[in-house]
Length: 317
Ligand SMILES: NC(=O)c1ccc[n+]([C@@H]2O[C@H](COP(=O)([O-])OP(=O)(O)OC[C@H]3O[C@@H](n4cnc5c(N)ncnc54)[C@H](O)[C@@H]3O)[C@@H](O)[C@H]2O)c1
Image (cartoon, rainbow, N blue to C red; front, side, top):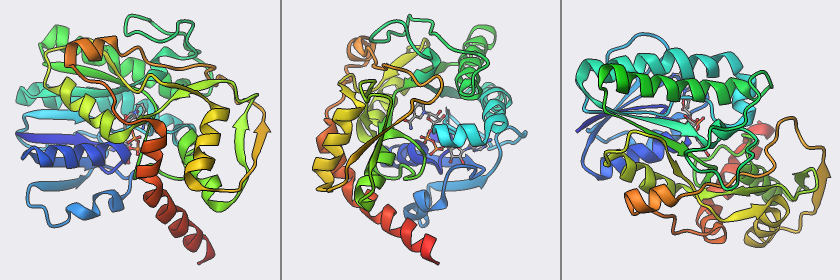
């Protein structure tokens, strides 16, 4: 297949490109480098089946005939989407419509990278795909949450009105190599702080919970969904729940750091609990995550070490 990956210079998009190349497909990656980095694709420099387009997907563009479109372009971390609020709304709305038009034009399959943030601060635990969510449409995080909810609505509309062959994955917190170390997400924060010997900041009382999925598990789930016939959203994430406090302890253990834990005020609209119900992915796709948090962090340790070093030497220059 010839596959278009939007947001392919980002954390998940670059791993997706690797996985699709390993399956012998040709990739066109469209990315405006708003939050992504060419370093994430540096290893593909000599790959003849890989093509990079520096492109804002909110603007009209034509990648040529494609068979599958994976729409991953969007700031994803709280630091990024709060900094780029309008861009986040645009890529979720205008960008998604543009991509759906491309899929329609070439009769290509389409997969939207959606998010657990569609559930907002959920009143149901764990979250099943049938739960409609509890989202503050005017809070600071709404630029991301509502953009993704619009993107889901647009995807379903193109499926219903134009028979585009669509999929929607609701991705839950994912970590691993190439995660930006200063993106404000829990794992990157804790790993960066632990490796620099700084205090680990835990918000509130640290009893709020999250679940974390290793990137290789996440990509395997997304690929399984892309090959299925399911058009409605499917949660892909790791259902094992950790309190923030426990997560901080695991990071200290894996990094061997002597850092302490410091408590700070809880940010606005910070969900108290988030955990996927993955029954649908298990039954429909035969998929479930294989890598636990401790193992996943050990597998990512070298990357985080190097990223922290590179970041500190850049700061010294
Ligand atoms: N990482 C996670 O845990 C997670 C969780 C839920 C959902 N997601 C979704 O997965 C996707 C990828 O997330 P990520 O963690 O890799 O984020 P990322 O920031 O690393 O990657 C996003 C990529 O999109 C690009 N981009 C942004 N706006 C663009 C535009 N207008 N045109 C072209 N490219 C644009 C960025 O430059 C970047 O390369 C996002 O859609 C995100 O919402 C990620």
